[in-house]
Amino acid sequence: MTSLTQRSSGLVQRRTEASRNAAADKERGSEDEDYEPRQDEEEEKGDSKETRLTLMEEVLLLGLKDREGYTSFWNDCISSGLRGCMLIELALRGRLQLEACVIRRKSLLARKVICKSAAPTGDMLLDEALKHIKDTQPPETVQSWIELLSGETWNPLKLHYQLRNVRERLAKNLVEKGVLTTEKQNFLLFDMTTHPLTNDTIKQRLVKKVQESVLDKWVNDPGRFDKRVLALIFLAHSSDVLENAFAPLLDEQYDLAMKRVRLLLDLEPETESAKANANELLWAVVAAFTK
Image (cartoon, rainbow, N blue to C red; front, side):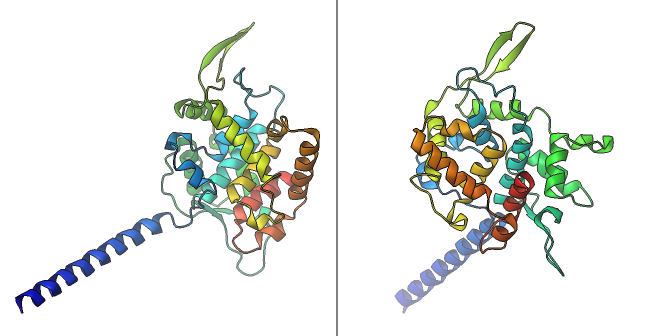
């Protein structure tokens, strides 16, 4: 009888512990339930967390000259492209979304950006942008946020939305992650801080990921694309750095890669955003740059 009582007591304790664990798991999951996982997470399990790059860092890394450590002086697209990266990164992490359509469907560029969760991301640039969006009433559209965060506004009352020194801050993040280093270079009239590449493995892995997405791992359906890779292709193109990833390719490979990129660019964002499992804010950013 005593043995039966002990077994029953143990069973109750195990059930109670299981219930507690399940409740804890559910609570942790609800904090970031809409976070979009990376397709390459399996590859990254063997790497340290420092080598996991955000969309902004990936686009900047594609644009940086390896030895010189700075982006092209003639590239005037990367600034707005990096702001688009921030919006998509925040959307993929479950922090932002587009406002819901109540009566009739609005176009992607007419819908406002809504803060879904104000939980910190751990990235200072992302958290700064998130705070601006959360505190702004009435809400703004995707196109407006790209312009405001870039400082491209004629309204002096909205200049405080501009995120300053974005490229330098992203480069410092990459220095901390062991991807870049910091040097001073003299350009006759002035000295400039540069960030040459120090970890070629991570850069080559990034270039390979972009190349394979439109060559060996090409899927002729945007819905089957990893959302991060899809966003990277669009934003690298909008930032005028996609060519850098395709430069090492043979002529035939290059032609095929650019042909498939053109297929993606010709997609209709309104149509794609209405499909199952699509991220509407991602396609809104695409629409802002391609339309």
